[in-house]
Image (cartoon, rainbow, N blue to C red; front, side):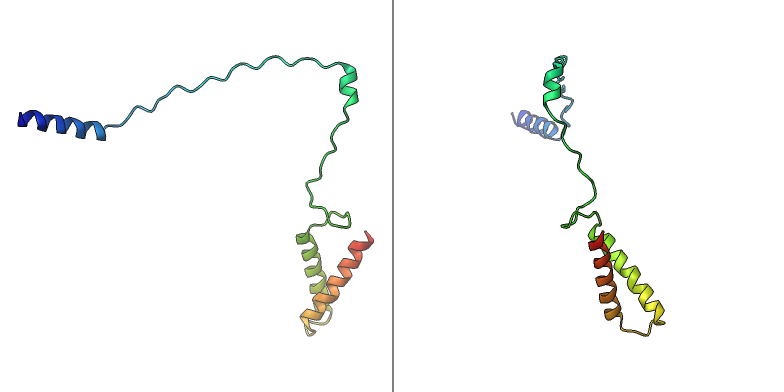
Amino acid sequence: MAEKAKAVGKKRAVKSTAKKDVTAKKAVPAKKAAPVAKSATAAAAKPAAPRRSRKPARADGGSVSPEQRWRMIAEAAYYRAEQSNFAGDSVEEWLAAESEIDAQLARG
């Protein structure tokens, strides 16, 4: 009887370590019904949805993103610093360039 108990214990150990078969059948989607033709009056009655722009819009309706604005200001500040042989105050040059770019963007 002791041999039988050991054999049962071994079988359980083998079963728990064996890999399970996970190849389950996937559900096959049902075929879609053929689309029903709409009448010409039904298609004409519904207006087309407007397309959205991928560019982020500004509050004033422009299309310059914050990153583009920052780059424009950085470039303008660089040219201002270059005119003074990089001897001026960089913060003042940045603020002047920022007000210049903001004025240009406000004009359109």
